[in-house]
Length: 224
Length: 132
Image (tube, rainbow over all chains, first blue to last red; front, side, top):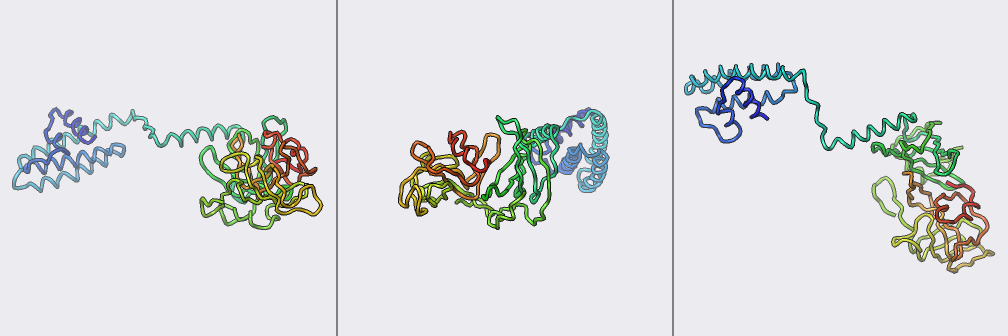
């Protein structure tokens, strides 16, 4: 991309400088060392095109005096000509950037982001149907769920002991003592089967996962 | 018992030498599993096992040392359901049946899951206190 930038800049001026092609390939001959290094710096600054071209300008401007001073005894005439060419290239690059600004390219979606985007879409669709309160471990909730062949919604009460976040399959684990025996049920909260979740109370806990409730007295998991 | 993370014990199948609680009034109190009739690794919620009675009440239908069939009604291992939810209980419990699947006792204590409906143990569901 750097080589292409310099190539386009050079092409705009009308001259294709061989240094542009030499940039990152072979080590340049010693008298042109300063020139190619300066071009390299120019191309680096132009590669950050998303940032303002003003920055690129100042960078290139700052870079300019350095290589001029370096080859002072040797390549002064060459350096002088390179200066003017650099200036032209700079101007051409600035023009090219201004032309591109009004029609920005859409940002390409990276392969690894697809799952995140899909999950967000599914969650948005699920949220439209029902409104979910903010669920945290320690909340005592009442949950209404639709069972396959039943008309009435079944009711589940209990304390949330864990919340596993994973996009649209975010699950909460709800614990309750039923008929003398502790039962823990994991519910996927964005499932269309779950019609309503209501937070009744909140118990102050200092943990994210309350697995210790299994080993405590049953009365800590009993909710009327 | 598996330890997958430091925070929680992950319970596994009901296999040979697993002690199970008996939750009906057939007379037995504890049964040790000697064979799981379904699954290579062991029995899960709703499966049948063969067990040996280790502890029994004095006057009951089964005595200590009897070999009996049982249906697992509560398991400490998670059982997944088709809607994405999972159920687990705090203990392992069975109900004693004969080899045809008919109940020996007349009452069932504690909650039972509705997985038993699919396994055709409708009598247990009818007698249960609470269906989860």
